[in-house]
Length: 139
Image (spheres, rainbow, N blue to C red):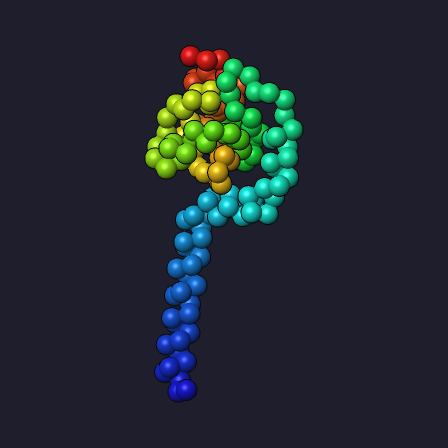
């Protein structure tokens, strides 16, 4: 291989690495959630299913992920939906108020049949009265 070919390969490899890094950073939340589910789903399923019956028609759930700063926190819940009724919401990828969830949510994502990650709006928590009234009381 001559010097020009080696230089070209180095530039192509560097460019490919840059593209992969940008794609990873752009989708880091999705990658993190999928990896977390792949590695620890058995533990999370056990924790959710060990809960006693849900109240007011809500799904069994746990706080699963979140982020924030200076009191502006976003929370994601792991939700068990035995009837898979959230599948349409996950396919739709639009925010909304869905049966079994206490208030309007920003996003529903399907992890596998009957298991969903549900992202609430910033400063909204399951079981708390805030702007969207997420206390879990049926409307």
